[in-house]
Length: 269
Image 1 (cartoon, rainbow, N blue to C red):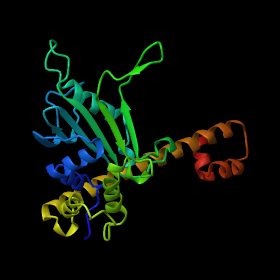
Image 2: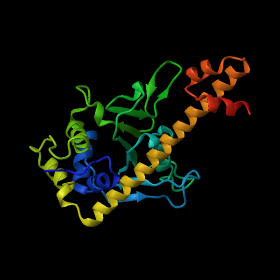
Image 3: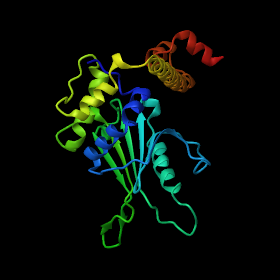
């Protein structure tokens, strides 16, 4: 069964906004039984919290939990500060008045990374951010239960919580091996997940939305790569100007910086 790639937010939202899939994933990951009262896609807070008009991919409310689920698609979209703001904003929105600061729900924010990362310290399958309080005695306690999780299925290993294995494998296989995915179809919930994102079962509207998302990603990637290239050229020009000011030979500077003789001469005009 060919499946659609979960690094596309249209496919991602279709999968994890399904109530049965969502409940199974949260049970496997956090060992929490949720009873969703609402599952919203592309959630916005009105008015915005903290002056930033954020849009959350999947936003879930149940009587005692609030879930924020995000997909990070490409390198340009990779920003820990942004996800921290989403996490805090989702807590602040629960404060109804100055007379009641205690929140009636625990907020769990779950960020899915759908590609490998360059920075070695982030090459982990699971990173967890907790608000830990420390005393002068070196004691630690957790006053606030809210947690922010970063999941990267491309670094699945023997230390990864067992409950995440099937879900992470599904994500990676959907991206790397969509035609013949090797996923755990012994579980009924994974059978349903595969059927939901079955490539042959996508509607024309879903296919068009997937193409639009892919085109948008390609445009953003090109903008990011163009920005990198401009930065590299500017750095080469800066080095060349410094060497020119020292009176060094043009041929040597061209070989050192990779700039042409004509480009070097234009810097002296």
